[in-house]
Amino acid sequence: MNYKKMYQEDVKVLTSIVGEDFIEAFEDVNEMYSMDKLGTVKNMPEAVLHVENKFQIQQIMKYAYQENIPVTVRGAGTSLVGGSVAVMGGIMLDMSRMNKIKELDQINLTLTVEPGVKLFEIYQAVEPEGLFYAPDPGEKNASIGGNISTNAGGMRAIKYGTTREWVRALEVVTPKGELLKFGSKVVKNSTGYGLKDLIIGSEGTLAIIVEATLKLIPKPRFTKSMLVCFDNREKAINAAPRLIKDYVLPTAVEYFEKQALDYNEAFLGTSVDGGNYQAYLLLSYDNNDDVALDKDIANVSKLVLENYGASEVMVVDPTSKRSNIWNVRGGFLTAINASTSFMDECDVVLPRARISEFLAYVREVSSELSIRIPYFGHIGDGNLHIYLCKDDIPNEKWDRLVEEGFDKLYKKAFEFGGLVSGEHGIGIAKRAYMKQLLGEEQLELMRGIKSVFDPKNILNPMKVIS
Image (cartoon, rainbow, N blue to C red; front, side, top):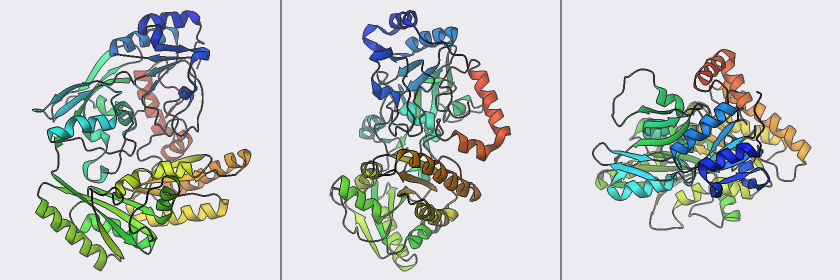
């Protein structure tokens, strides 16, 4: 890839588009733009443009395409696989200024937003109106553009699906600078190829999302959660699929072990009642009838205690901060990160029937390589988050152990019918494992799609399939 190196004349052209207050170039680029949240991949862009609207992006892309300059899009920078890192230099588009909520349509039940709107801001906009945007990724400060680009999942995916199911339309700028709209507010769409769905999950490699129209539903009136405690991890893991099959579908089914609670207490100062069991399921249910919801909770409590081997059940009191285990659950990644000098993540997704075997293998690898590997996950949909912790391991040894550890974990996941990523994407960090899984034929199909959208390969190069 013979990309153009940027010079002052390029900066002058780009400054004329965004204004001198909204460009950083060369040595003036803030170091934070060299990495994402996890920081496993680092490289500086040559210029960062703080764009304000889609028309600026059109002009920038026309110039970049003409000059063969690579372009990387960055939202809130919460990526964990290097997806928002400008590994080939060039231009970085910071989308954080494009943060307007443009329309709440209460007839068609849609919300139209710019890509820099944060996830928590979407909840704040719709829930007071009695409406509900269901995707619930753990990072609430992530931007919706990033969520769509990685097809983010989260804790409510088991009942409500991933981000893909909640996007009605996308407006995008192509690498050539064209402005296109895929989809609309309508519920049904059998009009040609699903180009909208190609953009979702493409990690910024096909086009730049400049506007999204999201599906909404009426907000469930009542929600209750319960913490189910087990003295044995296998009992907890085996109980999850039985719960899903035997009774009403939960909104969320999360799995974690005592060590995750210990990390939270040690590094974040948060704790919960009943924190001395070996393993836990955190369940959530919603309903529009509070009597029916109480009946569901009572029935599930009876099932897990009498049939699934649970030791204790605690209904979570949403008014008590100490008892609100969801706040604690949301802090697991932060707490694990605080417990070590550096870490890397395996965001693997498996058939539910193989989770117990896989986690046993994770513990085996941890012992074999003498490396700490904490984990937790969305066990209801089979998505596990597994962290390799560096601690005091020397750098050279760490690099070798991470490669060996990931090779072992992904190989076993593939044997069990799993996939490379459940929700964080491929980026640059997980490309080799996707290639192992999918093979050259599927990658060639993907490269063909990429070449139609981006013939010069200037948009987020070296990511996913490049």
